[in-house]
Amino acid sequence: MSTNFNVKSFGLNVIPDLRQGKQAAHTVEKAIGDMWEPVLDYLATNDNVFSGDVAREINKINLQTMQLGTIVNGDREVRNLDTSM
Image 1 (cartoon, one colour):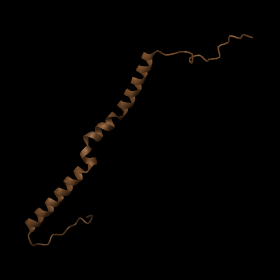
Image 2 (cartoon, rainbow, N blue to C red; image 1 turned 180 degrees about the vertical axis):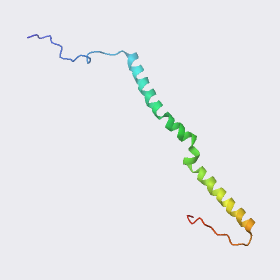
Image 3 (cartoon, helix red, strand yellow; image 1 turned 90 degrees about the horizontal axis):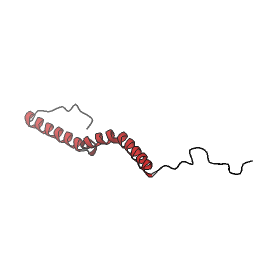
Image 4 (cartoon, rainbow, N blue to C red; image 1 turned 180 degrees about the horizontal axis):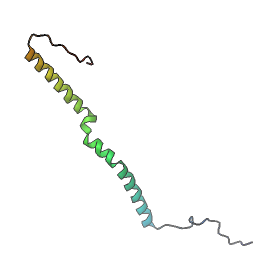
């Protein structure tokens, strides 16, 4: 029996240089970043929707419409068909 038998399997005894490690890290970072970039761009573009600015604007416009309707209709009774409020 041979006493100088290499017990390491092939591939585990290969030591990559520093450049390959940096390149692999850069590739992984870019792949993960590119995967999430469209989602983050969508969130940044539509930030006013998620922060509640659009809801405030809609409520403000609805209030203005109601006030304008009250001014135009005067003393006449106005039926509100929207019962969700």
